[in-house]
Image (cartoon, rainbow over all chains, first blue to last red; front, side):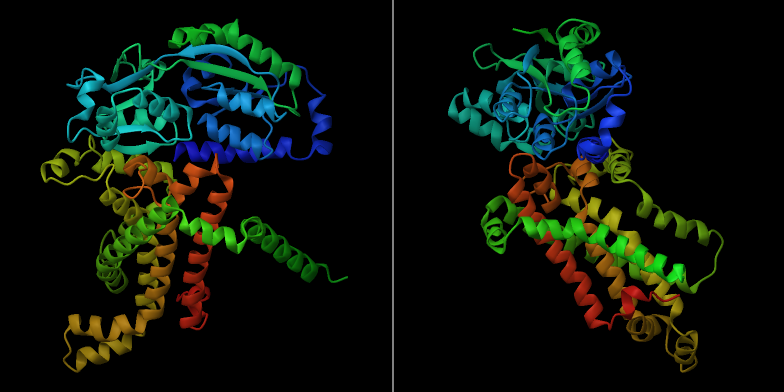
Length: 251
Length: 264
């Protein structure tokens, strides 16, 4: 699978530069404009790829990227689809004080010709739903949202879940391939499918606040450039790209 | 000095260290107690049980279809045989992501045969049957290749002798070829079993991940490693033990010559 390959390749690449500080010191001081190594939530794939093509970007579930950092992998920047994971790394002294840089809208996504028009249609028997697994932000937003619904409705929807995907790309893939009938993702993921999926907004009272946070990883090879990158997520080329993709400004 | 033997030994030592260290690390990081605990975890147990069931089903299909197919390839010469062998071997070198895409494009809901499969009332994606399809696809070549080699190496005079005694080819296949080629067939089955047990990418892309239905042990490891590295380690250790046991039992039963000395 593509993501597993990316993660493994990134682990090898990042372990190589983060693992032993003695050998890497010579290369880190050499160039000022060296590419920044960024670990970012996969919901930002399109936006960040377009605004910083020269940097080394790896995209995966925020939780997996956090786990890599916990295991000693040291990208320069960690940008997550929630505030919990960066805050946790910060409290452990593994990340600089994280900055809120964007928001996203949590929506119900369905194929464009679907007959599903609201969250109420998800309780029908035979509706196949793909959601994020419990550990990834999209999955915990989904569970928080469902918990705010009446218990019977929440149970019926969960009973229709057929796949717990490790990240949003997996959910979108199941929807665009017709394997699943509905899924909970971010509105930016729907926008990125060029009309193959449509987004259904959730009632305001159950919609979760989705805030993205980023920080510089402690012990990173390019801390200055990393900080510049984090700053540019709030104002700069990447902020523009995020806005274009449908992200909202930081709260 | 005699540098060449030294270089050979150094290479072997390097290879052994590199290949063994990651596996050893799994066991160093998880005590036997952790291992048993992980087997008590219902998520891990469901994943292992599903892995075993799907692997067994895939292996049954592979052996049932692959054995006669391998026999035919081993005993006949026909136009396009080299092409057929290459096509059968192709999944062997396909990246798992490509296998996943290929399965989606062919037997996925919007794939080539998706409509027909749906019309037949069969659901593959997001269903256990889809896992079996993915495992069968990636593991088949391991068996067929080995089985072909095993049949080729059977002394043809044995079969010819049985034919001159008036034994039909079907009987010769069942009574002479299969028993004689058995070590090779078992070895091929073990390799296919190991590959199926470890399948990850194609399963996730094609079948999804849901506890008890499509979440095999490798998927459960992937799902838990971010938040619960210890559980992931323990489940990994179980898979190492199972895979190691398969390899070892085949070697013991068939006196080592099986996996090491594939018939040629």
